[in-house]
Length: 158
Image 1 (cartoon, one colour):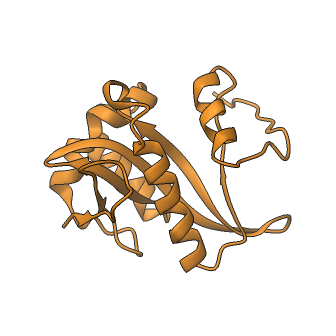
Image 2: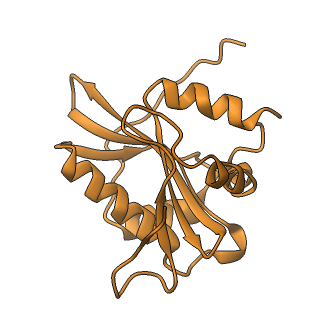
């Protein structure tokens, strides 16, 4: 069930928790509505979107949505991870706002919602990775007080 946001938030937005703390899907209808927005960021998600997300949620991820009425305007997939160099971190796998609704405070609302989750879950940091080509997203993250503390190195194995 959506939770209406306080005054000062992006107009008409409600936050929806699609998953529970154990990764269980609480709102399958909202998960289905999230798919087109999610694919704007992750075009290569498999045809079995619900199956992939169920596996991700079973591995500890959760999903939060920003909605207007019955329409998903933005979403975040996130999880809590413990590591040696930061301690407890809320890591954001995916953060995307519907392209037709950007620059309206939706991303900021979701990021603040995630920060509140991080504080409630006693995390030391809120972290995410962003592709080097996503310069508009980087401007947004910098504006929101995020910094680049390190490089991320990866080797594809396929």
